[in-house]
Amino acid sequence: MSGHSKWSSIKHKKAIVDSRRGAQFTKLARAVTVAAREGGGDINSNAALENAVRKAKAASMPKDNIERAIAKGTGEGGDGDALETVIYEGYGPAGVALLVETVTDNRNRTGPDVRNLFTKHGGSLGEPGSVAYLFEKKGVILVDAVRYSEDDLLLAVEAGAEDISEDEGVFEIVTTLADFTAVRRALEEAGIELDSAELTYRPSSLVPIEHDGQIQKLMKLIDSLEENDDVAAVHANFDVPADVLERVAAA
Image 1: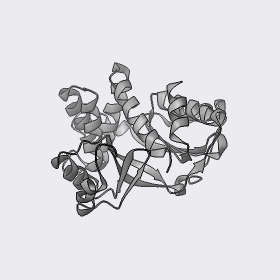
Image 2 (image 1 turned 30 degrees about the vertical axis):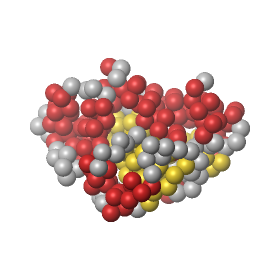
Image 3 (image 1 turned 135 degrees about the horizontal axis):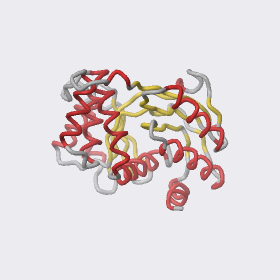
């Protein structure tokens, strides 16, 4: 897992900064709309919606915007059905598997755009199912391992966490989708500050990368995908030393 939880933390912090730019509000609103459409408009019973709303609030999205996005998803606010989640699968440099989550109103636009980005940055778009088996949808919560001890996190296990591991100064708490909200709330109620808490596709195996050149190419591909207006999230199964990842991320 070396470097992977660090990448998750870097992505989270980067997303918060980027999402404060007005253009990113569109992505956040789309995620709220789709979550509401697929699981209903009650955040207490829809973990995906609660997660999307939390991200929107963290980015300082106005309450009215969030409510309109939920209403759109539940059918109260117009054309929520025009949006759909489409997942693209492929390989990046060094054989790293990538799952690209998109929220789109036009597959004929999004598909070619994603394919072109893969090709441009040394990757290849695959067929459905080509890499999905390497990932599993989980709740993943990151906590600072310098500030807290594993004993502080035992309440997460009591609340339903599947696993707690530590690497490079970060605790990674893994949950099922059903237990994600309960575990997150248990930690927050205990006063534990979370670095991030997300529903994500977690890789079951990792591909080690040791050369700066390969990780730079991979990060360029991932960054280019994330910058696309239709892309909601990019998941990858690479294993990179944290010092190399920080150096590349800062470049």
